[in-house]
Image 1 (cartoon, one colour):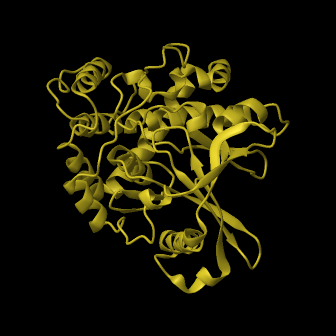
Image 2 (cartoon, helix red, strand yellow):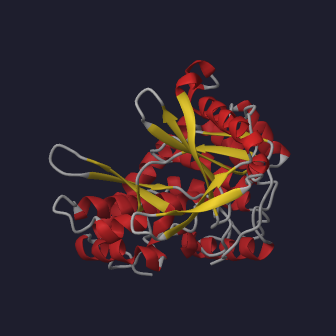
Image 3 (cartoon, helix red, strand yellow):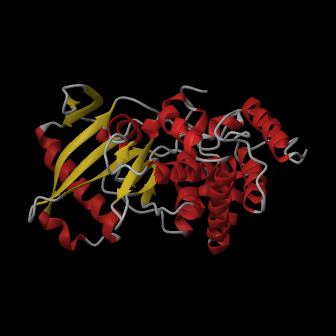
Length: 351
C-alpha cells in the first residue's frame, strides 16, 4: 500500500458544492498561520511514550491573537458562528502532529465555567479527505461537522477509544461483548468497501462504546479519510486484510458463520441504500464533481478498475479515467446488491 499520497487541492466544482451546502465559512485563522509557532514540546502518553504530537508555543505578540482566533473558529464549527459564548471559552493547548499525511493541529478548548474541555482539528485542506468526510456524513450512521476556507480544513473531534488501544487493552474486560463487536466490525468492513475508504488500520479508527441495559454496544468510526478512493487494489479498502486488525478478525472467524457474515453485510448495505436515497441530490452532485479529477494515479485507477470488474463480474469499469467514475458505478452496484457474492470466503474473513 502507498505510504504517502500526494496532496489534491480543492477544485472548482468541489468548491461550489461546499459553498452550496454551507461547508465553507470565514475562519479567523488559517493552517499556514498556525505553522508560525516558535517552539514545541513533545506530548507524552501516560506511560511516558512519545505520541508524535508536540505542544506548540507562539511568540508573545502572537500568542493572544492565535488563542482568540481559535476560540472564534470553535464557535464557527459548533454554533454557526454565534460568538455570544466565547467569553467563557479559552484555548488551553495547541498540539501539532509530526506524523501522517495531513500534519494536523489539535486544539483543546476549555469552558472556564466548569472546566469541561473539547477538541477540534485544523488541517491542510485536501480534496480526497473532504470527499471521504462527505461520504461518511451521508452514507454512514455518523454525522460529520467540518468547515473549509481556502486551503484550511477544520474538523470536529471524533470521540472514541483508538482501535489499536481497544484491541490491545479492552477485549479482556468481563463486560466485553465479543459477538457484538464482531457484528460491528463486519458492518464497518462493508461500509469502508462500499465507500472506497482505504487504510483502515487499527490506529485510523476509534471504537465508540455505549453501555446498554444488558450488554455493551459498539460502533467503529473512521478518523482518517486521507486514503479515500486513492489506492489501486480492492483489498486496500477492506479493513479485514490489514494485519493490525488481526485480533478482531480472528474472533470474527471463530464466532461468525459465513451465513451470519452475509446477513450483517446485507443489513449494512440496506442501511446505506436508504441513506443514499435520503441524500440522493447532494450525493449525485458530489459524485459528479469527482468524475472530473483523478484523485489518484492512472496506474491505480486502472488496477482498481480491473479488481472491481472481477469482483462484480462485469466489464463496466474498463476504460475509466477517474476514481469518481469508479465510485459512482461501484456504489450503485453495492447498494443494489440483493445477495452478496461474498468476498470473505467460505469461512469468513479469509482472502
